[in-house]
Image (cartoon, rainbow, N blue to C red):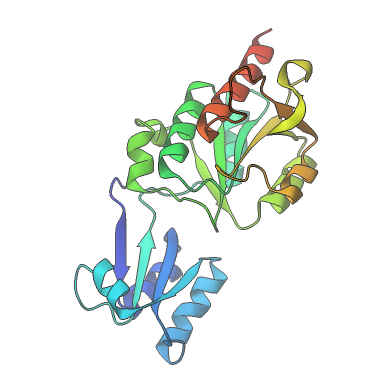
Length: 246
């Protein structure tokens, strides 16, 4: 796996990166550049479901390490992504019911790294993140995971809701974290399960919550009513571990 986040610059280089199926987190294109060979690059980005930002020349210049970006810079993942099937196979190989962490638009790389680290320690078979409006596998994520990123597969999907529906057809059921849910100790969290953790500020989005089978809350005894996303994930994940061990 690769340990440094990197950029790919120039129209031909970026085009070939897409065609070779490299993991591209985001594409940055000079404002107004949509025709000619750039239109081909944009088509490949669309096919790959890659987010595109149209930015100023100053922004592109600041991202470029070569000064020859030709109006386009791609930010590539620091690590390769797995597929959802790879995560399911990891559970099958261990002879265990799947235990998957699904993240609904986690944006802070430190949170994502901490979640991957905890996922590894609690025996989750993998983590699923969305392609858009969320942090990807950057060098900061890798560092914060303390090496867990080498052992816990992370898949990236275009649509979290569609992914949940597909996994339900494979026998998984889903619980999401929300302060208005049922206390986690009163829920049966055994069996093939997906634990859904929401955005740091807004929590789990409405449609994702509606697609979950249960909503779990963590008992709060302090003066504030929320936990950091990675901490909430850890608390709920270890309740799942406790119930699996009982």
